[in-house]
Amino acid sequence: MNKNHTFARALALLLILLCLTPVMALAEEAAAPTADPLATQAPAAAETATQDENEINYDINVMEALTGIAQSTGFANATWQEYVMIAIACVLLYLAIVKQFEPLLLLPIAFGMLLANLPLAGMMGNPVYTEYALTDYAKALSDAALKNKEVIAGVNAAGEMVYRVETSNGGLLYYLYQGVKLGIYPPLIFMGVGAMTDFAPLIANPKSLLMGAGAQFGIFFAFTVAILFGFDAREASAIGIIGGADGPTAIFVTTKLAPHLLGPIAVAAYSYMALVPVIQPPIMRLLTTKKERLIRMDTLRPVSKTETIIFPIVVTLLVSFLLPDAAPLIGMLMLGNLMRVTGVVDRISKTAQNELMNIVTIFLGVTVGATANGSTFLDGDTIKVIFLGVFAFGFGTVGGVVVAKIMNWFTGGKINPLIGSAGVSAVPMAARVSQVVGQKEDPGNFLLMHAMGPNVAGVIGSAVAAGVFLQLFG
Image (cartoon, rainbow, N blue to C red; front, side, top):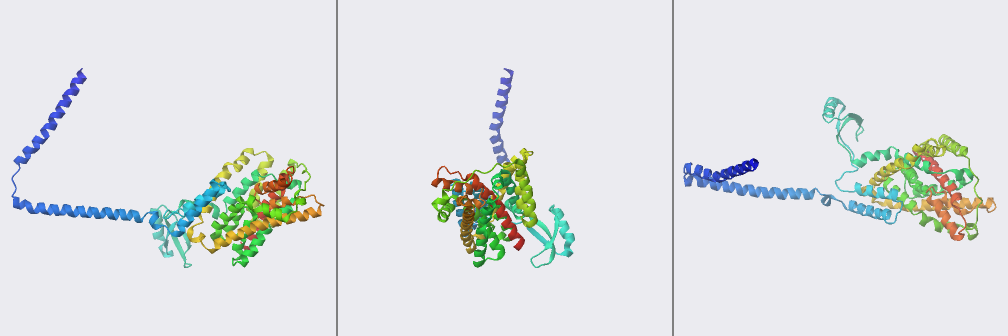
């Protein structure tokens, strides 16, 4: 009860104060001296004019602000090239999501392409530097200390030695792209591929290495045609490697020899890898007879664990001694495989196959896609790259099948030429295509394990071809 009485008294006091407030205000107004109407008229008019002027200025400022906002949007600053590239990115996203064409890489590539072409976003923007003459080192050091940056010595566009201080950071994708530019991501992908690859079919049938080598014919054919199309040797090497049907290898070579073509080459390489089941079967049927497609091959011999352990070590040493430039790819491929076959580092092997592979795939795909900006992608060279990529891939299939036919003739009909098409290194998709085409002729014919031999040999073959180009033109 006491609490209720206290609350009621406080409420009553508050109401009384509210009622007295207007009364006190009227009393103060009445007590104030009366001003001369003429004296107050002019200031009142001036005050009214000032209010009107402020209102006008306020309205103008609002319009200026709205105009400034509109002019700073992407809609007002986008170029037609950016709109076209965004449309292409959406088409690639459709192919990755709906048609499931190599979605693990095509999806991040397409979205990276979309991000890089967002107007004013600067996702791939380079850092901005202020340059100082060599005599202004003290000022450069002072400015660097204020920005918590370092003074970097370098050469400017005129070829003069200068000091640089970073004044603005680059975009997010610019820093992620350094893993591509420095050749870090592709070898890590190769390590994951090695950890997932079984080389036993190749060890059991070493002759299949010849089919893997034959399938690299498309690389050198496309290289020659690219030279005829007006590309220089470095650019032609990057284009030709598309014929190996190995995305990481194509990216690795392109970043070293022709980084300005990275966008179209990456898109072409992964698009054609996804189209293996479409491109290869007609070529395979065209080059083989029904009798050849019906050949059943003998079961492969068992491969011992010792052989599988020795194989990656020997291949690493042999290839790296012959072609040192291929060592990053071959070395990481065989390291991943060695982790798999020894069985003593199972946890690391699983990490290379899954978590590491997935993380690097995301970074690789997004940053490679981000290199495809409208100003460089939409030109005649891109059309040529796409066109030559088809030839490289098609003639790679031709080379593998032809070598397999020759080997079949030498062995007296013991090798089904269909497995030669698997010599391109699209693992294991190309081997599955050989199986599918063979079973259309004979449902009881199982060619998958036989096709895996040239298929994994193709991975080694494309890395060796990359090493040849890098050694010749790098």
